[in-house]
Amino acid sequence: SGAPHAVDLDYRTDVGYDLWWSSNATEFVQPWGLHVEGAVPPWLAGGQLLRTGPCLFEFGGSRMHHDFDGFACVTKWRFDRGSVTLQRRMVASELLNESRHTGRLAPHVTMLSVTPRMPMAKRVEAIHGPTDNTNICVARTGEHVYLTNDQGVATNSIDPLTLNSLGHTAVQDSGAGMFTGAHKQAQSTFGS
Image (cartoon, rainbow, N blue to C red; front, side, top):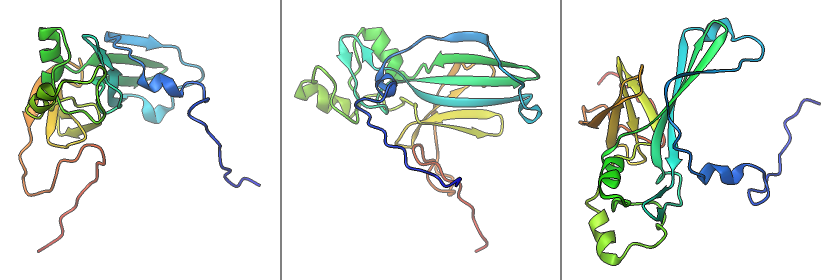
């Protein structure tokens, strides 16, 4: 009848569901050509799609268990006439850089507990730790591309051509409302 039907998915047995929380920090620094079956629609030619998300859940003997906590990477698909390329880079956030420098997961606030559980002193220290793990949302304003986290106050800038991290960017409230991360919404301002 063409009517939509409910799909019964059981995340405990559904193939692939658990892959969401597996680590894959593979980077494609140079555009990598993908195999295309059929034709790339003409309206996509010359376009690109940027997405951020988690790609690394383990570091220095610790494991994070929530997708908001996994170290961020940014992925770009570029569409040209008859071809699609892929680029993928880890976001060089303060959190990742500090973790790499010390060789262990830097204390920071997480959505779920880390395994092994941090001692109380480290959990208190985490309140003041890096908050720029920007694996939730991509926002473009003019020529600038920003990645945000679930708090909406921490952002990292990236170069949209190379995906190189350009560093942490402080977002100032310009009166246009909160620069939200996890639940991005456009806000329009009407006359006074």
